[in-house]
Image 1 (cartoon, rainbow, N blue to C red):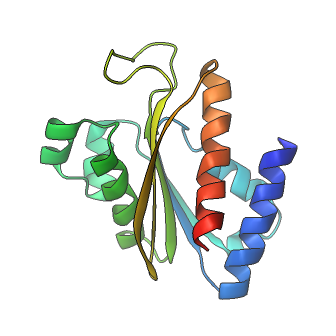
Image 2 (tube, rainbow, N blue to C red):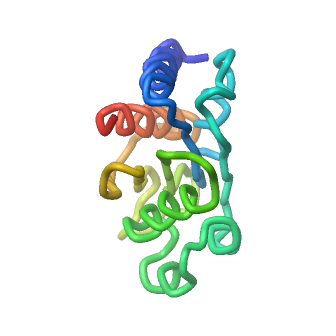
Length: 160
């Protein structure tokens, strides 16, 4: 486990346990990486509720309630989709906070408008407005995915 990610998970677990809250994740390009790192920490069942890996658009619609119109108009890699993923994860779980990630990890799949490394994040919670962030990352597929995991955890920690 990456030491940086491990430290972020420990801080996040402490923050969630203090509040008696649970986390749900909605992941696309990270393929469940955030959930994986969270569940690597012993005792994570006390603060990690569940994770959705919604790689396809249909999964985003069926599991998280992302609107078909949103995907048609804005695409899977968009602020609108990330926000709907984060909110849908909360609605379809018993958690109080959520992390959503949707992007293009490469090496293929990019375009001029959305090149490889384009990633949207969103965080939703019971006590704050849904927040989103766009990043442009560099590196190979695994490097981009690891950077996404770090950014997702750091973003939630800032909001808590």
